[in-house]
Image 1 (cartoon, helix red, strand yellow):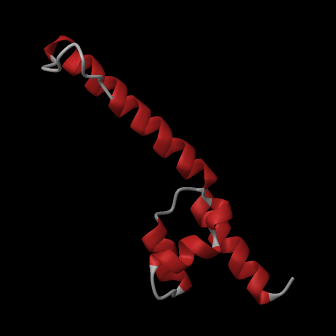
Image 2 (cartoon, one colour):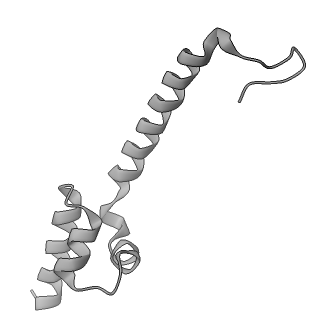
Length: 79
């Protein structure tokens, strides 16, 4: 294994275990978090799933809270 392979593995493991992207960026000494995310995006798919799940929960919760309090007319559609 080359040193670069170990570096890449370390970054992937940190991201896969939930280490925040800015922390991984600092460890890797990348210029910005965008560079880290671009290079290691393969290690982030579960973040996307969790984000969607959280968004769905937030939308569902807001929908229940707003439920009968809508001021929309009959011809307007809720989003």
